[in-house]
Length: 170
Image 1 (cartoon, one colour):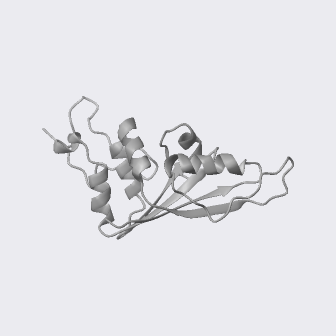
Image 2 (cartoon, rainbow, N blue to C red):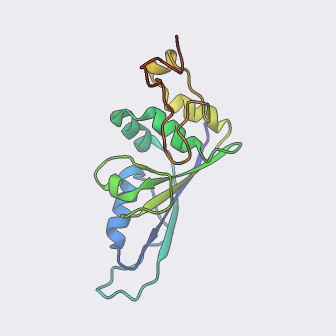
């Protein structure tokens, strides 16, 4: 499938541009931003600078969500911004530096975020396929379905107060 993927992040005056670039490269090794500001000594006179660049794949992101066993969370977070064949989502730069994935659902975050924009034909189906796991044989999932977490990140309850299953089964 031919995807177009771009990643952007903002380097604030107090941040080390090398560390910011390193955090993005941890998840997107082929990211080559338009420019990287020079490191400055404190106090910095530099303004915030947006770095943007294309990447070839989401392979490291998908491998990491598989290793962390957060495939349903990844589907939900990546599909929240899904419209037609386009989606956008944010990831924590701080988490990326330590080899983890953390989806950022609400605004900015200490340590910064990176915004990922993905475009491609049948993108919703592609996201479902890339985040598939054997549990979906029992509880089928699709992008934006009734099992998806809320926009605030609150999970759907699968069991009621008495421990009875409320979704996907008897």
